[in-house]
Image (cartoon, rainbow, N blue to C red; front, side, top):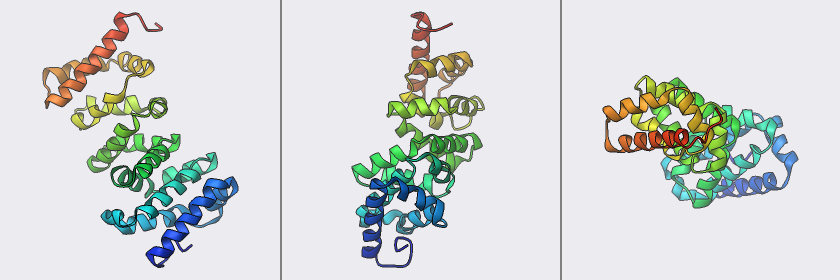
Length: 233
């Protein structure tokens, strides 16, 4: 596969463009790519790893690779393989930060598949500072997509976040994810697990003004939900 072999940048860009076109058009190509080509996802993402912070030098290559990954992950049998590849979350996170508008949008959509969301939530639960920081950045941006919010909540995001915050780990960072959390089901879950008490505790001893604002907004949302009787108790 010219994409990951030591070919010229031009050859890699052409190979990425052709692969992107094929995976966009043909479902069987998406299935074949993962099932029949050894280490296909790693080989697909290797050029992005090689570019490092110099991705601006080949934005077309980046966009084609990320779009190919989205196409590959669109079929059910490929989603676990995509989510479990150790390069996927770091490279898509980087593409959320650095790339064309289309690349950023595509990265968000790829990260929004249920298996990848599970992997992100698992990263938060593990609690490694650097990895949690990256996962939180991704979740914060994904929460602006309503469908992603619902998926993340259904995959267990609320307990993962609240348990870490209850243990007073990375409070400011993790609480930022709640900014986009407005749907009734999520607010009810926050209320049911008693997290509002922790929010009051944060308000009594805020570490910064932004954290205080987020905690106050969450308390207001939960209280408003209860006071209006807009709950299925």
